Image 1 (tube, one colour):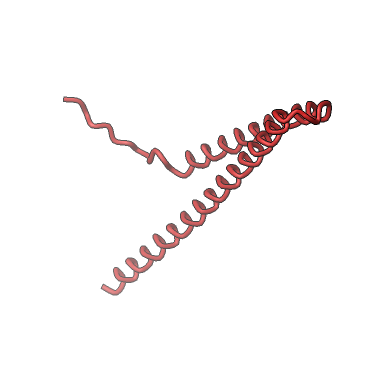
Image 2 (spheres, rainbow, N blue to C red):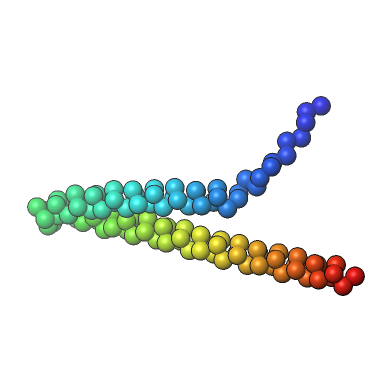
Length: 108
């Protein structure tokens, strides 16, 4: 019979989440750079031919992509801050609980 595999560490531990968030922020930064390059490209086309409605629409869409990549980065940073706050609150609760249990043991 096969042996049951037991994880030693949580698959979603703090370090792994931080690494994933870092990768997301790097990818978002690269996406933003590409979107701004695309915007510059279509801007040149619009400067040469102001009547080109397709280039204008694509220029606006590339700006939307640049903004959404920035928004995604801000959301990731917000989640990291919440993660840090929750982890410090949990560690304080554990310390407080262990302190009370130690006091109970002393009084017993």
